Length: 584
Image (cartoon, rainbow, N blue to C red; front, side):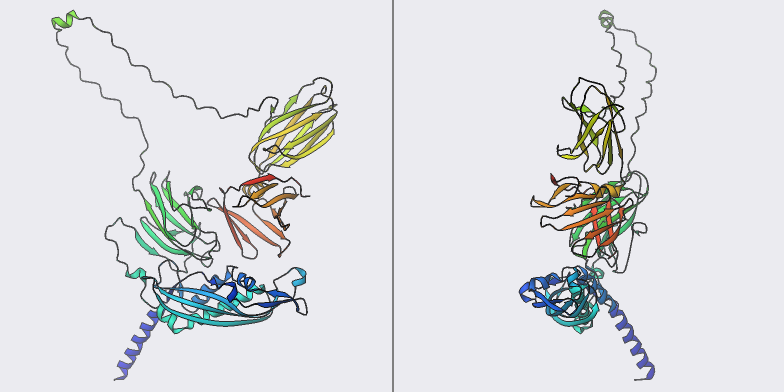
């Protein structure tokens, strides 16, 4: 063979190898932990000289896999090795791993100071990998990897060592020839025939390296089916955003066709304001929203982060029937003038019946007034911002009971008194009738309280001498959206799914420090400022600060450690008994 032919063959082989390397793609399932009995037991050592502290059971070793960081490390290491990860149908082979700790020799130097972060020691993790054909679901092979990691003076605790060992297993898996051969198979998406009808949705498979935000969404055109996955590699808040142009009156229709977890959908108008969404706790798979004005609307899809990688298919479609505003029909044209015929003898004999003129059009009925607070007998109505003057009565002690409407999270200022009013006492009650706060004084007294709920509150004013008049004044400071979310239900038990108290709260410093108490006695204190910045003071873990933002009706809290927490503005917690205003 000539030199030119050899060079040509080598170039062709190199191009083929390069093309094959570009399609190394797998569908990676969240890593699973083997049963506790398969995990290695060990002895936990702690303190400056690593004294034995107690046994680490298999169940405790298994919990080291539940930090959520293992899957992120797996994806990162596979991507570095040229194996793309996409869990939404872009890959021909599925990969699932079952992990177990086979060796643990760990010391936590700061264990006696209630810190589990600093770590020294060695951990070995073995992972059994199962490969499946995504087209048929059949198993096509099994692989095993086993890697150890040893650190001295590291951070991240036992879970950090386990995550590092899992990342080492991912590097071994990516280098395995059997895995690379399976991952180089033709892509399922490229083998799908294109639908013939022009209105059928086209399929858009997003590559794993794409990123989108609410301010910079991915532009798409309906009808469309998006195949992708939500993970922290793409966006820290595990969300994706799509810009969809709509005409005035056009209805946007969204449907989650496939998903590995609960996915919440939110639609924002061209101005960025929330117009529709599904509930994060039990999100519906379908959502519709009608455009009031023409423009680009943003569709956001997000998940809570469990599992850390969520594959999904989202159908984006519209009705394509623009809305036409109603207008009254035009008045009918007058009939053409006709010459009246001469009346017949019968018509002349019959009396002419007078015609009844049409009734004039009736004006529209006025809107019903908003309901006002009507307190029960013996209770006086009060309103925030409108003082109430109470006249002099009979000599002797008396109590006036007032009812007023309060807003959750607002700071109430209640003041009662007048010159020469004498001894006064003020008591505030919750909407359920439990005592919240009280105060007393001479000639003038008052209290300040943060209201925990929207509802009708009761306030009693006691006078030592009812013959002396007084004036009651109620004012309230409205919180911003972040303080409202922070202060809501303060003082109440929050019930869990079993109907029992999961925790309750009390004010350590009203308005700025709210303490959470669990039935076992564990406590943590939350502080939130206007604008969403805040801090958690924890008794069993390091304290950390955070920032909070509101996106499309969803709160997204990002901690200084990178941890994410999300909840909807529409979330409602079920409350139990009122425990009290101040912490004991």
